[in-house]
Image (tube, rainbow, N blue to C red; front, side, top):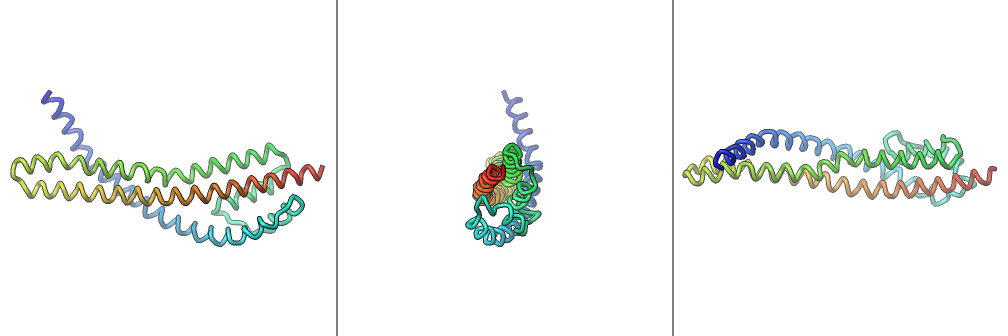
Length: 201
């Protein structure tokens, strides 16, 4: 039994360095995510302000004319897929394919934030628990300096892990609301295009 516990202890302590490295990598990704999210947020504000007026005035009679002259964006998924809908063949199957592709791209875009939201706290917890073993050993042997060093690592990894998770969670929630509104708008456009196609026939 002692041999098994020693093996488990060696494995857990050996994971500390990889966990810290992963935390640093994810922290870097979180910083990058904040920058890209802010840029996207500013573009989204301008685009939505303009499109709100456009959508309010859309009918099946003017949908193509209005959306074809609407300035798009090569960075916003909703703008990209509105442009694709305008260029696709006037058939329901192509419209549905565009909507499905949009949903897939939304999930792909959310994957980064979702990973940070889930793995950040997990790695933070691992980074907390792993140094606790050596810290308790140091406490038992009277090595206060060793215990303090391990506890410092434990608290630092907890804070970084929670910060990473918080960034991922906030970005994930905001983007989910954006994409839900975008899907609603795209479905509205598709319905208008279908009526326009029926009228055209």
